[in-house]
Length: 181
Image (spheres, rainbow, N blue to C red):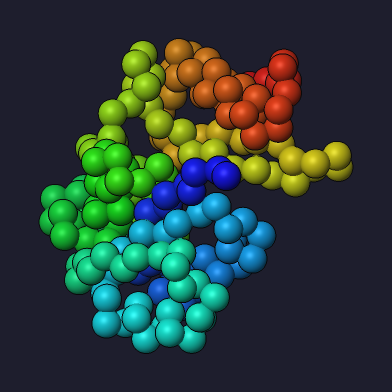
């Protein structure tokens, strides 16, 4: 049997949350029962929504976090005041090795700043990059940075290429991914 992947989820971030987050967890579990979700957010609200989805029983734990980082909040302000937020606590659980990954549909700038404050970077990499799978004619392409960094030098671009190549190898089981800058 495979070990469960422990996923921290900021349930309060983004539009139509937390309802859409809980629906996303339900959809995920329909195809993969090897995930366990630590759901961070306002416990009283989350319990009411999750009660509508009995198929989630046994696959989650709610961790109360009363503070929420707003979508329009400055990333720096969010980082300064957000230590009790669902986003901060979800990311912090990864540093504490309680979870394997953390997810948020909330404020992307705040997510990057808080992640950088809490988590260590890969040695030699000084800028994070957002990654996304973009559909193409054959399958999907992996695209890195997505405009997350306003200024990038040559080393940053090479770092992004290396990180993208490593992620492609992992996701698509390929030996030599094609890289374009």
